[in-house]
Length: 224
Image 1 (cartoon, rainbow, N blue to C red):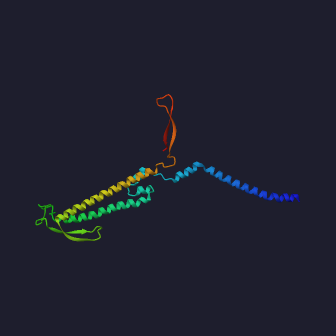
Image 2 (image 1 turned 180 degrees about the vertical axis):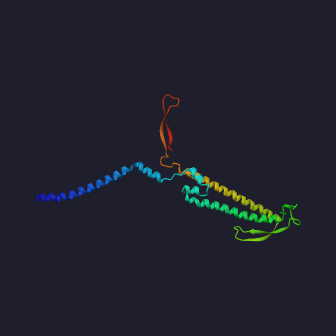
Image 3 (image 1 turned 90 degrees about the vertical axis):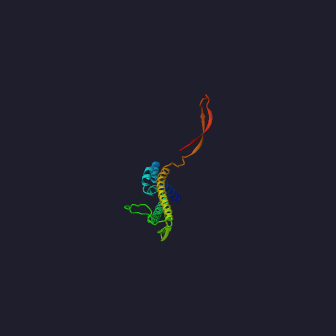
């Protein structure tokens, strides 16, 4: 009877021991797997995931508008680059159209036959008040009409739209240059270390420039 009682008491204890042993083996297996990977393996995986662009490559790719930003993974900058350059090119196109309209009208006041002795001079009968039909377009070139304008007005409008056309070309060139510079600077910044090791701390220091006895002091240490 006593043996049976001891047996009944040992059964739950054996179950608890077996469960504890299983948990211990599981923890040992996990620790062994983590040890097999090691810190070097984890660091390599993190380094593989971190993108580090090459500034020279970013600059070369930026010669094609937007490709430098695409290489740097700055996708949100693509609309800015393309809209800016597209706006500059479209402005050049519109200003050039209007310039050519007034240039064509302006030429009608002058002798344009190269074989004529009066080439480049005002045609006979042309005065300051003479006018010609000139095509005038609206802002976005959606509509146009022909209006009689004097030579003086046509000349001033011709010069005005020529300046605007040249200015649009200069601005577009500046935007293109800025996109190349931005891609290069962004690539450099992405390779710049911004980790937690960038610290500034105060340390004690013993200074002994000309004296025999060391002088205590304080120095600032910046870790880069």
